[in-house]
Length: 562
Image (cartoon, rainbow, N blue to C red; front, side, top):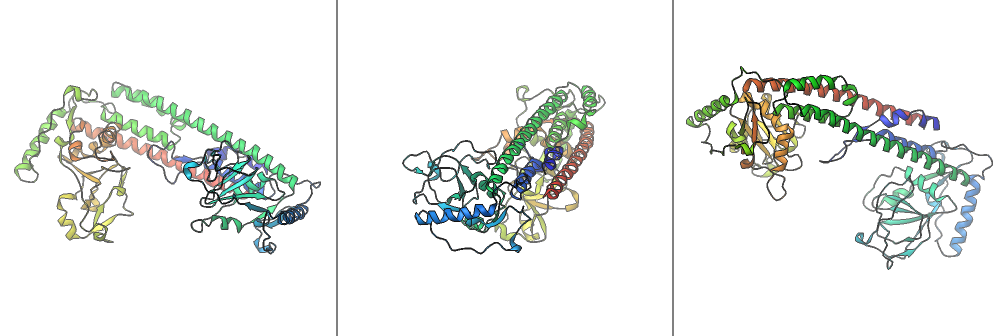
């Protein structure tokens, strides 16, 4: 069985899985699933008698059970434990797997007793860090029930197992002082190797049955009991293999860090170029090594961010001297605004401050201009919540878009709310029309943005979403990519307002300094970004498919081994 572990190292190290939930700033979006599965496999093999060979010279588990019964009688006589009701033997239907003939099936509660710490309790503020533990430990830094406060300490010689009744956390503790706390059970096995007992507990998959009932769930289990000497051999082998897992895990972490550094370094050679021609040369060099560079979702995301940054700095496509410069485009936008004001389709805009040379964050190509966001849009403003809140929502009608519906790659409509026509008309000022740019302006999804598509017709938005309506529709795709670029995302997160510093006002958004190219160059930039983003998505799809295959392979190997 050890060959199953050692012969499939490439599977254990390469099988990775996307985490179910990742907060902003998380170090990684993936877990090392293969190594996690390997740890579980090691425990499963250990408790089923498949990790180490049996020795015919070992005293059998039935003899160990006889000694356990003698130990129980002694402790009852000394009034250290209470006499418990005799439980029925484990029947054939309850047995979970076939065990070696020297092992015995036993009810878990027949193998340990609980130590009461005289009813003393400690507050969570009085709990202390308890130091390093065996490599099979779950890794918690603290555990309910231990303190360095000598007034609260109760002397209980180790080793013992501490079980968190509220959390199912388990600790193997091999020192003498443990204090009791609510929701903590102190367990000591009879005549067994304590580390083996603890290892077996780690193999249980305990499902909660409600608050403070985990201990009962634990006690409903049965255990396959090996001879005592085999228990010791199992613990030794588990320690060796878990140490190997630790080593593999650290190597993967180090490899990932080195890979990320390499990717960042090479992508920096793209963002540091002076011209689009230099970008093309450097891109061709890097593209030769795509298969070894962009092998993770993180590296592809780095590539996307680089592409967007190049797009808004004028380095992604070459400038054409025949293009009408951006200054002329801005004059046309201003005239279009004047026409719309005259036709009473928009209100007369407030004149915004001119961007001084000192306010320009970087140097643009000569045909580009920095302009205020408010100067190139007809509308920047958030939505509102319909009167009545959730009671105004329906199962069908006009889509009411909230921040969870706004994604950078489009609208997510699985959980969209709907409002009726009457509510939609009353919220006329927050209507969304095709080609509007939608931007999340509050909360953890701040900065997510998408373009409202034509196929939906009309919609409305909540107060957490801002509607950005470009004066010229032809500029909306470039402006959307501009919003997603590291440059504008930096402004969004750096210029938040409000107590929680997670919100953007209309006034703040209007003043954003937008790098604005000639219209024809905007269209070339959008086409180039589209092509490169499609390439990135293809790379990501290939990676995800490969990872799914590795995860399935890891599961299959583990299942076959058991």
